[in-house]
Image 1 (tube, helix red, strand yellow):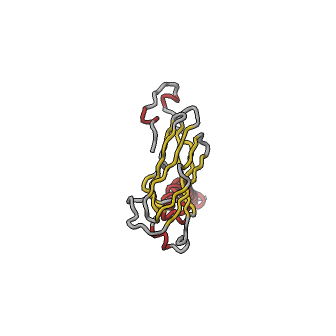
Image 2 (tube, helix red, strand yellow; image 1 turned 90 degrees about the vertical axis):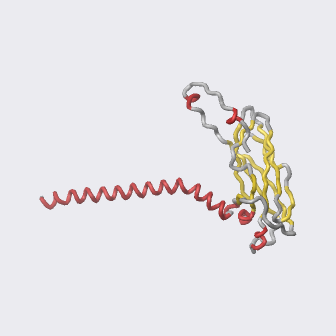
Image 3 (cartoon, helix red, strand yellow; image 1 turned 135 degrees about the horizontal axis):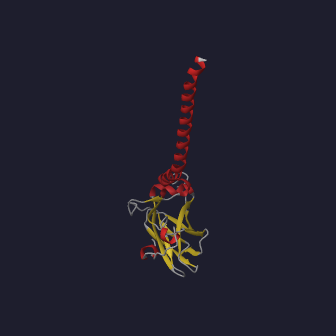
Length: 207
């Protein structure tokens, strides 16, 4: 009996350790799940994986090659009542030349709508060499009913692209944007039945 009684605290301690380990493992898995998205985004931005373009720290490539490359522009919408399209379907530039292109967005709905654009390039390997100096992507943009907004993007193609065996003979890169709706959170006062005027800054246009 004494031996059985003595073993009980040992079993309890063992159970507590098992529970603690399981909780730590579960917490770690949840944390990894939350971190996966931003880490994946950082990885794509750093490597160009999945056609993710690079954010240029400087406005110019430093050198311009005597070689042409054609940039095609594509636009799509996903669940947002906007007319969203490139102003010009393509442009031919020199590799290393800084260029500005324009997209146009028009709200076709009867109330203000906020949108946000994601992007990629094709072929995917070219993403690491497609540098955007200015871009409207990942910026919330609110348009009033019938309102049209010019959305410029400034970019250049890194001359180092010609040093990549798979891309050295590349003639065309496609820059594609998809516009999604962004739901604005309802103010607490309004949700509780009160009234609250939307500030002008919230209704103004994004970049």
